[in-house]
Length: 96
Image 1 (cartoon, rainbow, N blue to C red):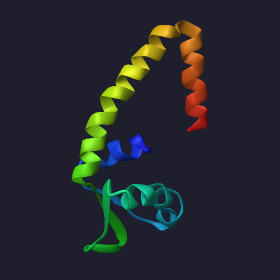
Image 2 (image 1 turned 180 degrees about the horizontal axis):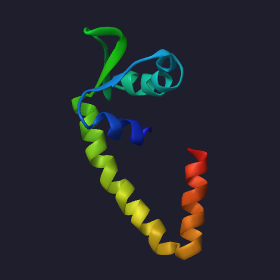
Image 3 (image 1 turned 180 degrees about the vertical axis):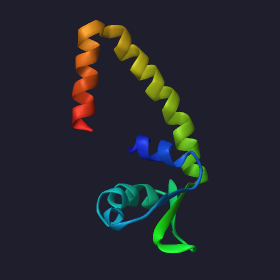
């Protein structure tokens, strides 16, 4: 699941525009749209843009997933300390 994408859309209707929309971001959104988690519509003010909103199912899934994500993060941070935790964070950032 793309929790980060759902969380990004959760701030209210978001917009995507420009030539890169056709490649990366839209490809990440398609499974979420097909799954009924987000609604992607053409922006009536600028047909090159898309307006993104979470559906009721998307909000529900996000409300369930975020506490699990936070708990899991806290568990990992308790297991790793100091340099190990910083190394993990650096490596995860490099992968994203």
